[in-house]
Amino acid sequence: MSVNARILVTPRSLTAEPHPEVERLKDIGYDIVYSPAGAMPTEEDLLSLVPGCVGWLAGVEPVTSRIIEAARDLKVISRNGVGIDNLPVDILSKKGVKIMTADGANSLGVAELTIGLIFSALRSIPHADAGIKAGQWPRLRGLEIRGRTVGIIGCGAIGREVARIIVALGARVLAYDPVRPNLDLPGDCFSYAEVDEIVSTADILSLHCPLPKDGTALLGRERLFAAKPGQILINTARARLIDEDALIEALDCGQIGYYATDVFEPEPPESLRLAGHARVVATSHIGGFTAESVDRATRIAADNLLSALRHESADRSSDRAL
Image 1: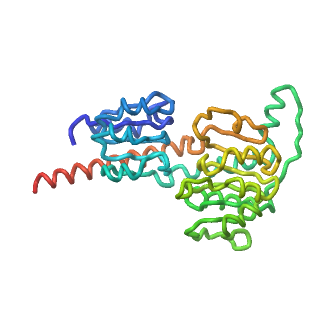
Image 2 (image 1 turned 180 degrees about the vertical axis):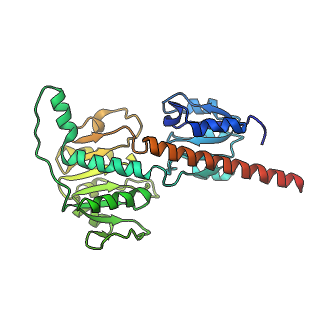
Image 3 (image 1 turned 120 degrees about the vertical axis):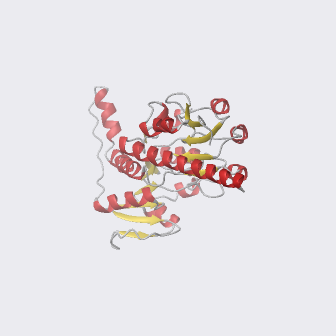
């Protein structure tokens, strides 16, 4: 590896304020290239920054084939999270670019935000807060979580953490996961079921899964209108899991009682049709944006990046020796 090889850093949490785990890469001999501070980099930003970079500590910014074509020296992309929906995986694979993820780093932060969104919707907390600040005294009758059925789609690191908290709060969990991992939860308050059964019976439905392989929405109009009337829908995973037009229709008529989300497409949203809806509780992709989650994710992503680059350098040295 040549001295002063370049590493691109693009997650908004790391460009707004440089992190020690990133800055330490300078001590090893790398030049750190940051995208615009605190902003989602555009395609043009990335096209100008990625040439000459051997490593990329990446966030959730969309990565196009044009960007990868310009990244002729790129050896590894290390995500500071687990999602890779924003990456052209097939193209990267063909170019021999390794993809690494910070598995489990932000699971607790996202799980805790999920619980916060559930209570915000159950008790109409944002509505009450906004009303009081406007000089009013709104009092909407809320709901308690104990004894309710909470559907969880996806029981990876985040989904299983949510399930454990929900059970501890006295609610019953119906979960879907193709692997059906053992979560060591009591059978009287946790069980697996199929997606359609969960959608139709859950009082609260929380999404913690990747997109379907065919790229379609998991919750289209048919499923949204087959849901239990007044259902609270939570999304801290991916905006495209839900058909937005069908969701707005379901919110307008009260079929979906509340939609609480931390994710939009695009981010920030270009329209307030959904984000500004009276039945929507919105946060700005802050699930993994806690001091602890950022530290864990950045440390893991930086370690992954170094490991991959050192391995690649060792492989090249071995080839030269032969």
